[in-house]
Length: 186
Image 1 (cartoon, one colour):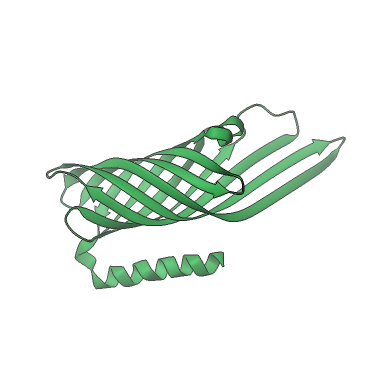
Image 2: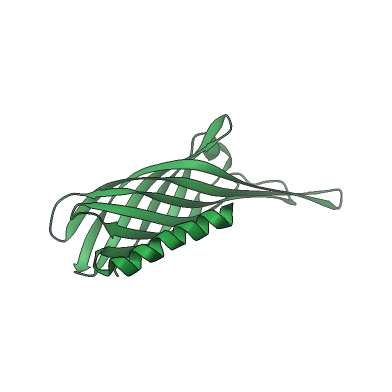
């Protein structure tokens, strides 16, 4: 199911790229991910990257599709021999609305999609090592805001602040992503 979703996502954007080269763009960003809520009680600051494909529907409205990777470690020092990590691969689609004209273009955005979650706990106890791996896919939402600062007609600085909500049974995993990178026209 995960592979089918990813293949579908890539196919849709590949077809769109070939049909509308002049309206396409992409952004590659590095990010810092700050866990919030209950997730923030256990996880430390995360790091990762996001790639976004952009299709211009009108001069101010864009369709977006993104895929990213974020990884967190534990917030506190664990006892010797203990390790904990959590990662997310969000695959999302959404809309972005840009304001203004000129070189500085602020925007608001909203995306939705699946997040592929993975956690790993390793415990060493009396010379024995025990490992538990867990993987699952969950639905999520991500409202955000940011800006583009154009260096030239084809290249811009892209800075985004995105609040990610991943809905799990009985609660949600939330984190604030601060991303910066380069956007370019295709």
